[in-house]
Length: 266
Image (tube, rainbow, N blue to C red; front, side, top):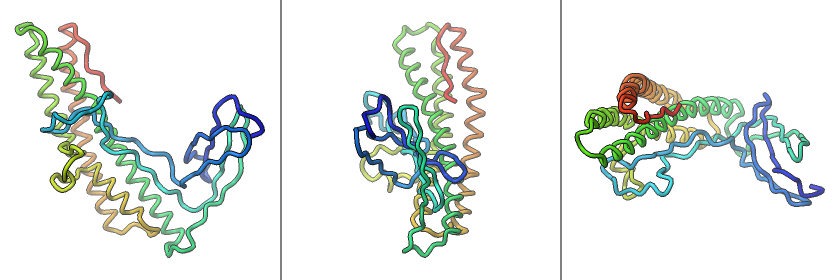
């Protein structure tokens, strides 16, 4: 850089189709600056747990009342041609980049391409599971806050029915969510041994193991993915039914009491 830029410096990596793979912020000192790309795309959707684990109210959610249920997943990009664009002060500078296969790997470029397609399909399903979990957690957090407020109010003011419906809705949501993520995990002790992984966690494990080498996925990998996909679709179907029936019913009751409704996170 000949001078310190006025705004941010952005580096974008695009694949052969022109789709942006990764966007990074660069340093902006006068002179030579360096940005390292780890050859991976941007992280996918993260899971944000807004309620404490089952039977573990002692877990501290922190000031933001959010704990991680799984960070976003990144996928190593396959060999091929890419474009790297530097954007600074309204100007763009683009250069081609050729990503080569590791010469020490026995996997072929065809193997890597097949693996990449499979990994993207698995991650789409993991994102779908993450989205469902985040919607459930968002709703459960509001229900818990609503119940806490109602319990602080004098008895006999008509809030008993609201509490009953709210608690019933929470239980239905938990029944769906516990198939998508392990709700007993506290982050302490031997959680991974004591409690079995659920759909989102099994998808993450499957993705991690599929990406450990340069070979195409096995037939068994594809079969396991399809099993998890069926479980995921069943959970999402049940969730949509709850959010389209039970939640509107509770919101109508809240409206009758002149109370704010539960906001549905899309």
